[in-house]
Length: 224
Image (cartoon, rainbow, N blue to C red):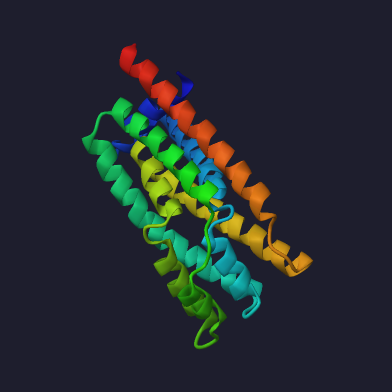
């Protein structure tokens, strides 16, 4: 029931807008940091083998790596702010236990999505290979459009329904940037992509474990 307790405290905390006391301040940082760690790990996994990694590696062959990462960071910050706002709103309207159950099912769906694999469309490939204007602006716009409705955005919405909104926002952004930085680094240093099958199967297994954990935890809470 550890996840349930953390989720309940997180939900209580995010409705507080007053200045916390010293003890509640420590509680605040514990919940926020917990949400950051959880969201970072979940979104890092969601991003493995995703088309965004392929776009990042393609852009890195056209622009300087730091320009690509800066563009990714800006786009991710904006998209995940939208995602967290949606998730926060849903989390305030629906019962915690049912949200956790739906979230667990959603993560199983993300597992199937990841197992299927992801590829750049011809249009996305052309955009990534096209070189014009400000590098940061081009990368930002490309990633913003690519992430709308993508599984990393949906996973962030799901996390924000259950956990602290600030921690989820920071963590999801950090997780995606780290995953894309890994792809860029491997592509530039080794001249090849990450091992697609191993990454896809590993990410799928982690999604199944996390989804199953949420489902079991929520069922126990509903029957408790």
